[in-house]
Image 1 (cartoon, rainbow, N blue to C red):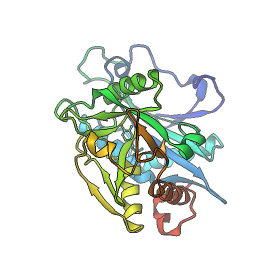
Image 2: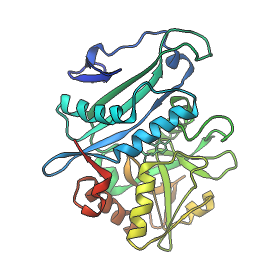
Image 3: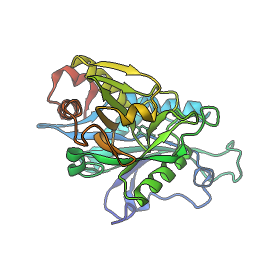
Image 4: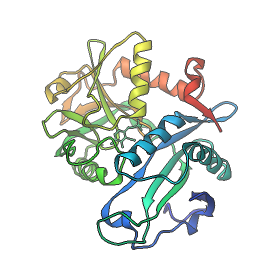
Length: 306
Ligand code: PMP
């Protein structure tokens, strides 16, 4: 199956476009120089409706990403929010991944971005679990990458920008070629940063630890888990973590819109604790799943009805 070859609709610059005809020219600035901005959002099917998880926060991050790289999105946040709902309905999808994308057009070639039109598209497609339901249950094996997250002064790491993903792609490729499921990237000082497309947590003595958002994306799932864990009575701490901390942790997991709450049972061929999914991870997974499926009224403000 190719993502380009299926029936459906794409939202492009304010209009619905036939999925197969949603194309860009080869001389598209973003394609050559790696500057586009995007989001990854999820819609969940609940008992009686479809909801989008933390839609406004995702749209806000998209606009902040654009602001960081001096790009003006030619639509309001309200229009982008509404378009995400409309394109889900148009494609008759209920549990889906939503991908808003902002890119620069083909008016000018060369590094300077001035003079290129800013385009926005929103794609949606059916998405189940990211690495398979069995992995959510049994956990994954992770390798520390030889690639580092870029230094905070080399780019805008808070921007969810395509170019920032080159180190993620290389790290993931390295890990999976060696038979691991995912990679863990360190920052340029050697502290733990994040996964290729996910934030990272450990649990030690019933406290959750996660790196500060200096060298990693300010993940919306990360933020949700911090809040959920606190309300479950766990202490949480955002701080620099070393690999020593991780090797001696009781539990470890990744968080992200696509990967959800993914238990990590091994890092660099060392078992995390006894190599089994821990009870805190399981509890948070269950809570998160219920919240996303509108089964926990306390968090209904995180859900937008489609
Ligand atoms: N870090 C990176 C590099 C990511 O790509 C993602 C996925 N968006 C995350 C962290 C997790 O962010 P979120 O929980 O907002 O999906």
